[in-house]
Image (cartoon, rainbow, N blue to C red; front, side, top):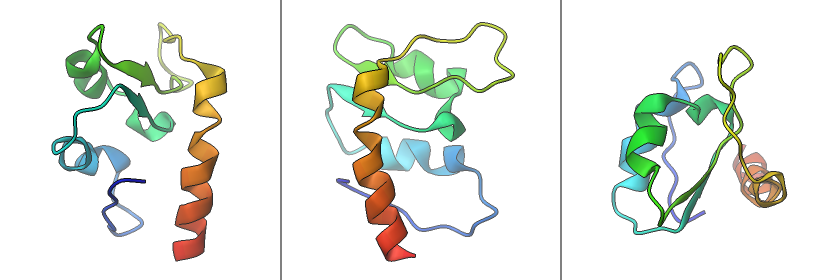
Length: 84
């Protein structure tokens, strides 16, 4: 991870999305379902940025994502588990 923000366990992931992404110029955003929001996806949806976020189960129109690339998120999850 390039940056992380610690919040209380009851805070929704999306509350920190803008702060996490703002300082970076990136080619891809890989995030879990907690970040599946049109408010996040729409500004990122450019030819320069690959959005790798699985759709929430309740989404009426599921979005495609690169499942192989999404597996790289496991590295971040292991890092977070070490912090806990």
